[in-house]
Every structure is written in structure tokens, then in C-alpha cells.
Length: 115
Ligand code: AMP
Ligand code: ZN
Image (cartoon, rainbow, N blue to C red; front, top):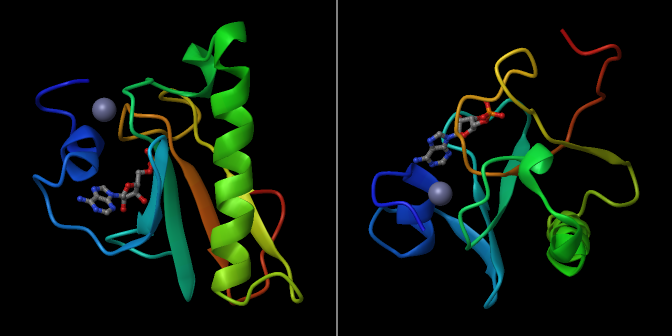
């Protein structure tokens, strides 16, 4: 837990967010600055800095986050057309919030490679 981490604060209900799914371990909410018609963020409640900070003991949590991303995508109606799940890691990876999050993006065709 981190007192001033924006995503920890969302997890604790101290900052508003449009939450679409939540359970004891994780939550999914709408990105404030959406880059696609549907843009969700999936985060663990526990403060983990990034995918790179995951430990072998976090295996179940890592799987849980992916399955929550899948569930949220299904509920948003993205499964048939397809969607993207991406994690930015560190400064060159484009990470701006240092609390692990999976972006779930859909509702338009995605290009590759990313910028
Ligand atoms: P990243 O650049 O991969 O670290 O992604 C951080 C994401 O968090 C960006 O897409 C931001 O728009 C989003 N974001 C930052 N603050 C908030 C917030 N308070 N509520 C929802 N999304 C946020
Ligand atoms: Zn945090």
C-alpha cells in the first residue's frame, strides 16, 4: 500500500473512478483519458510497481489480473471483434503511474507496432 499512489487511492475508494469489476484482489475501472472507445485499467489492490516487480510468489495474482481483463473485455462486448491487453513498464516502456496496471483497449482496430 502506498499513501500517495493514485491507483492505491482508487482501490481504497479515496479517489473516484468508474469501476466496472472488482473483487478482493483486483479491480477494473475506466481510464480517465481513453485511447479507444473502451479503455479499462486492471490493477491489483496491493501496491506492485509494475509487471517487472512481480515475484514468483505473485503467480496467482498475475493470472488473476489477466483473467479479470478477459472478464471485463467480455462484459464490454469486445471478445468477438478482438481487443488489446498491454502493460507499459518503466520509463522507456511508457509507464506513467507506478502501480501495475493492464490496459484493456477495444472498440476500434489497433495498429502495430505501437509507438
Ligand atoms: P501508463 O502510462 O501505462 O502508466 O498508464 C497510466 C494510465 O492511467 C493512463 O492511461 C492515464 O490516463 C490513466 N490514469 C491516470 N490517473 C487516472 C485516474 N485517476 N483515473 C483513471 N485513469 C487514470
Ligand atoms: Zn499503488
